[in-house]
Amino acid sequence: MLCGEGYTTPILRLVTGDLSSCGFANNETALDLNYPTFALHTQHGKSFSTSFRRTVTNVGVSNSTYYAIVNAPSNIKINVEPNFLSFEALLEKKSFSVKLEGYSDESIISGVLIWSDGTHNVRSPVVVYTGQNPYNL
Image 1: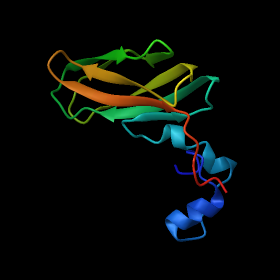
Image 2: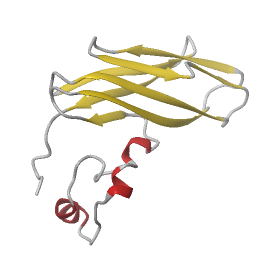
Image 3: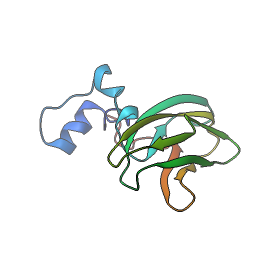
Protein backbone atom coordinates (compact mmCIF):
# COMPACT_ATOMS: atom_id res chain seq x y z
CA MET A 1 0.00 0.00 0.00
CA LEU A 2 2.76 2.46 0.91
CA CYS A 3 4.53 1.84 -2.40
CA GLY A 4 1.28 2.62 -4.21
CA GLU A 5 1.08 5.87 -2.27
CA GLY A 6 4.48 6.98 -3.62
CA TYR A 7 6.89 5.76 -0.97
CA THR A 8 10.35 4.86 -2.23
CA THR A 9 12.24 1.77 -1.11
CA PRO A 10 14.52 3.71 1.31
CA ILE A 11 11.55 5.40 2.99
CA LEU A 12 9.57 2.16 3.08
CA ARG A 13 12.48 0.50 4.89
CA LEU A 14 12.56 3.34 7.44
CA VAL A 15 8.86 2.84 8.13
CA THR A 16 8.83 -0.98 8.23
CA GLY A 17 12.25 -1.56 9.79
CA ASP A 18 12.92 -4.45 7.42
CA LEU A 19 14.19 -5.01 3.85
CA SER A 20 10.87 -4.43 2.07
CA SER A 21 11.11 -2.86 -1.37
CA CYS A 22 8.87 -1.05 -3.82
CA GLY A 23 8.55 -2.29 -7.37
CA PHE A 24 5.98 -2.25 -10.14
CA ALA A 25 4.15 -5.33 -8.82
CA ASN A 26 3.32 -3.82 -5.43
CA ASN A 27 2.81 -0.23 -6.66
CA GLU A 28 -0.30 -1.22 -8.58
CA THR A 29 -2.06 -3.01 -5.72
CA ALA A 30 -2.91 -0.02 -3.49
CA LEU A 31 -6.04 0.91 -5.47
CA ASP A 32 -7.60 -2.51 -4.97
CA LEU A 33 -7.10 -2.94 -1.24
CA ASN A 34 -10.58 -3.61 0.08
CA TYR A 35 -10.72 -0.48 2.26
CA PRO A 36 -13.86 1.63 2.69
CA THR A 37 -11.94 4.76 1.67
CA PHE A 38 -11.10 5.63 -1.93
CA ALA A 39 -7.86 7.63 -2.16
CA LEU A 40 -5.98 8.61 -5.30
CA HIS A 41 -2.66 10.42 -5.50
CA THR A 42 -2.27 12.35 -8.76
CA GLN A 43 -0.35 15.28 -10.21
CA HIS A 44 -1.50 18.85 -9.63
CA GLY A 45 -2.97 20.43 -12.76
CA LYS A 46 -3.47 17.08 -14.52
CA SER A 47 -6.57 15.16 -15.42
CA PHE A 48 -7.03 11.70 -13.93
CA SER A 49 -9.07 8.57 -14.49
CA THR A 50 -8.90 5.43 -12.38
CA SER A 51 -11.10 2.65 -11.06
CA PHE A 52 -11.37 0.91 -7.72
CA ARG A 53 -12.97 -2.47 -7.05
CA ARG A 54 -14.52 -3.30 -3.69
CA THR A 55 -16.44 -6.15 -2.05
CA VAL A 56 -18.86 -5.56 0.80
CA THR A 57 -20.58 -7.94 3.20
CA ASN A 58 -24.17 -7.51 4.34
CA VAL A 59 -24.17 -7.15 8.11
CA GLY A 60 -27.66 -5.68 8.17
CA VAL A 61 -31.00 -7.28 7.53
CA SER A 62 -31.75 -9.91 4.91
CA ASN A 63 -33.63 -8.86 1.78
CA SER A 64 -32.24 -5.34 1.69
CA THR A 65 -31.22 -3.07 -1.16
CA TYR A 66 -28.69 -0.26 -0.86
CA TYR A 67 -28.52 2.52 -3.43
CA ALA A 68 -25.37 4.50 -4.22
CA ILE A 69 -25.56 8.22 -3.48
CA VAL A 70 -22.58 10.29 -4.60
CA ASN A 71 -21.64 13.79 -3.48
CA ALA A 72 -18.65 15.28 -5.25
CA PRO A 73 -17.31 18.69 -6.24
CA SER A 74 -17.73 19.76 -9.86
CA ASN A 75 -14.16 18.81 -10.85
CA ILE A 76 -14.65 15.10 -10.01
CA LYS A 77 -16.99 12.61 -11.60
CA ILE A 78 -17.67 9.53 -9.45
CA ASN A 79 -19.40 6.64 -11.20
CA VAL A 80 -20.52 3.56 -9.22
CA GLU A 81 -21.33 0.26 -10.98
CA PRO A 82 -23.71 -1.23 -10.17
CA ASN A 83 -25.45 1.69 -8.52
CA PHE A 84 -27.46 -0.54 -6.18
CA LEU A 85 -26.68 -3.72 -4.22
CA SER A 86 -29.46 -6.16 -3.35
CA PHE A 87 -28.84 -8.66 -0.58
CA GLU A 88 -30.93 -11.73 0.16
CA ALA A 89 -29.06 -12.98 3.24
CA LEU A 90 -26.95 -11.91 6.17
CA LEU A 91 -23.18 -12.10 5.42
CA GLU A 92 -23.82 -12.21 1.66
CA LYS A 93 -21.04 -10.54 -0.36
CA LYS A 94 -21.43 -8.17 -3.31
CA SER A 95 -18.83 -6.41 -5.45
CA PHE A 96 -18.90 -3.00 -7.10
CA SER A 97 -16.52 -0.61 -8.83
CA VAL A 98 -15.97 3.11 -8.48
CA LYS A 99 -14.54 5.12 -11.35
CA LEU A 100 -13.02 8.52 -10.64
CA GLU A 101 -12.44 11.04 -13.40
CA GLY A 102 -11.57 14.67 -13.16
CA TYR A 103 -9.03 17.40 -12.96
CA SER A 104 -6.79 18.14 -9.97
CA ASP A 105 -6.64 21.91 -9.62
CA GLU A 106 -6.40 21.78 -5.80
CA SER A 107 -4.09 19.97 -3.38
CA ILE A 108 -7.00 17.93 -2.02
CA ILE A 109 -10.45 17.23 -3.41
CA SER A 110 -12.98 15.20 -1.50
CA GLY A 111 -16.37 13.67 -2.00
CA VAL A 112 -18.36 10.82 -0.53
CA LEU A 113 -20.06 7.61 -1.61
CA ILE A 114 -23.05 6.68 0.55
CA TRP A 115 -24.78 3.32 0.34
CA SER A 116 -28.32 3.85 1.66
CA ASP A 117 -31.32 1.57 2.16
CA GLY A 118 -33.45 4.57 3.17
CA THR A 119 -32.81 3.97 6.88
CA HIS A 120 -29.14 3.03 7.17
CA ASN A 121 -26.29 4.94 5.51
CA VAL A 122 -22.79 3.56 4.96
CA ARG A 123 -20.33 6.35 4.10
CA SER A 124 -17.03 6.03 2.24
CA PRO A 125 -14.78 9.05 1.78
CA VAL A 126 -13.45 9.70 -1.73
CA VAL A 127 -10.23 11.73 -1.76
CA VAL A 128 -7.98 12.90 -4.60
CA TYR A 129 -4.79 14.56 -3.45
CA THR A 130 -1.76 16.06 -5.14
CA GLY A 131 0.49 16.64 -2.17
CA GLN A 132 4.02 15.41 -2.74
CA ASN A 133 5.57 12.81 -0.46
CA PRO A 134 8.06 14.90 1.54
CA TYR A 135 10.32 11.86 1.91
CA ASN A 136 10.97 11.18 -1.78
CA LEU A 137 14.56 10.00 -1.78
